Length: 163
Image (tube, rainbow, N blue to C red; front, side, top):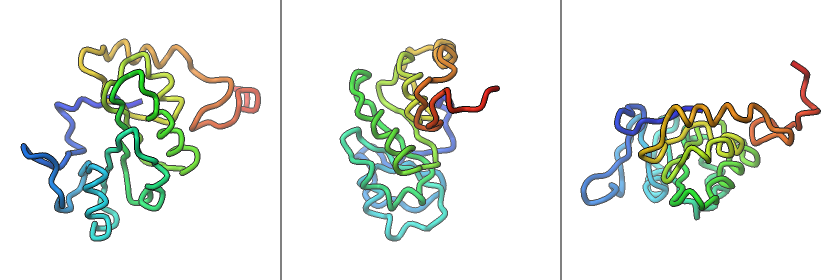
């Protein structure tokens, strides 16, 4: 799992200013757009341009199915660590929609969530301020595999080849 430091992130930039998000951003590599921005520009947005979309946890990700081949990143938002709707979004993206790009967890993401996030198909996180990166990496080593499988490895443990 990749841990994102938003202060030093250079690969992805949100589009907006002091007055909020720009309604019609100009096409540039590595832009992370709100869903509203994406809907406003997707018909004219150049194909092949590395683009990401930020989703609230109330959005039905299946509505993005036709757009997923054009997206390199879907950032899911956890408004509170106790609100698990974005786990379902991640699982639907990986299992039902076969999204191969980056699925990123943002918002109120705490260390305790990491094993389940990983199991649901999230491969990058932005930790809530005050969370320890060392603790986060340790949390991912607690459970190396899951008997039932997960969003990435669907086969149960007994059906996998022995190492």
